[in-house]
Amino acid sequence: MKPAAFEYHSPATAEEAVNLLAELGDEAKAIAGGQSLVPMLALRLAVFDHLVDLGRVTELRGIEVRGDTVWIGAGTTHAAVGRSEEVRRAVPLLSRATPHIGHFQIRNRGTIGGSIAHADAAAEYPAVALTLDAQLEALSPRGRRTIAAADFFTGMWSTALEPDELLTGIVFPVWHGRSGFAVEEFARRSGDFALAGATVAVRIDADSCVERCGIGLFGLAPTTERAAAAEAELIGRRVSEISADEVGHAATAGLTSVPSDMHGSGDYRKRIGAQMVARAWRRAVDEAGND
Ligand code: FAD
Image 1: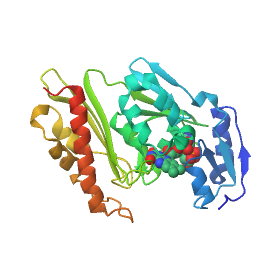
Image 2 (image 1 turned 45 degrees about the vertical axis):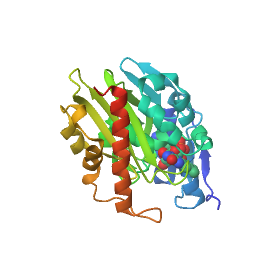
Image 3 (image 1 turned 60 degrees about the horizontal axis):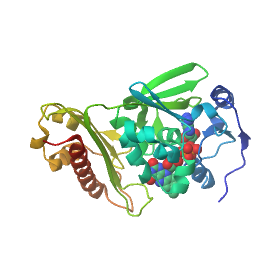
Image 4 (image 1 turned 90 degrees about the vertical axis):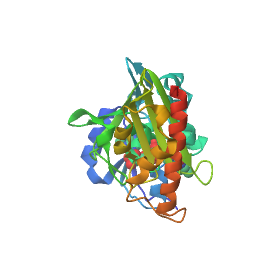
């Protein structure tokens, strides 16, 4: 199928883009890599009279280490994130999540901002942003604001962004110290969205106790979730006394709306999710140094 006819706009700056979105209202949508939006337009699941292409907005692209954080422009492609040495060193979880996203053609076009703004519950980057406590920078005609990842994902494919607001950058804090990071997911075929997946970040103190941890869940609820209750139970405990299966169970026990579809029932997904958390926990703790 082909998309319905639309008028194409190609602003040169983020400010121009948000002004256009504000002026054109509900009939307009921003387009970045088009890897989620174009299929929706082609299938007529979405129809917009105006598309505001962010492709020429160079200020939305780039990767910069800024003190104890790494800033990534919303328009930076998955491929550029995956290639970045800075990201590999400072935000390893993001690097490790990248090869799981679709196929290389999708990673060449798709952008980190598009993935986070689209907020697919089975996508990897929203889970990474939640797990690491990223901050999301947004711009609208009313000015700039920063939204904590914890407040950003508000429901199925919905976020805290206003219709005339753009995500401009994502700020990832660097986790120093004895830290480990892992992403595990199960998909029926390489390149498919995950049926269930988990991201784990853990920092261990000098007494080998859990000092800080983040557990992200994807494909397991209507939106990306963080297993906050399970994390709280782990803080302060010696890692050698924590079983990975216990973490997997605790992180998924409270899930009540696990999606069910032709690929798998909610119950099946939940059981896989517990396994993914357990595997990711084991690998993250091994990396942090389990002694
Ligand atoms: P677009 O498709 O251009 O836009 C998506 C949405 O985000 C639109 O609503 C748009 O208005 C909005 N948007 C874009 N940029 C901004 C911005 N800066 N500010 C505010 N709103 C913005 N993703 C995964 O995570 N994991 C997968 O395994 C995976 N597999 C895929 C397999 C296939 C076959 C395909 C086609 C896609 C897959 N994707 C997967 C989706 C892919 O990662 C998309 O690139 C991503 O979800 C959207 O990024 P985009 O830049 O293409 O955004």
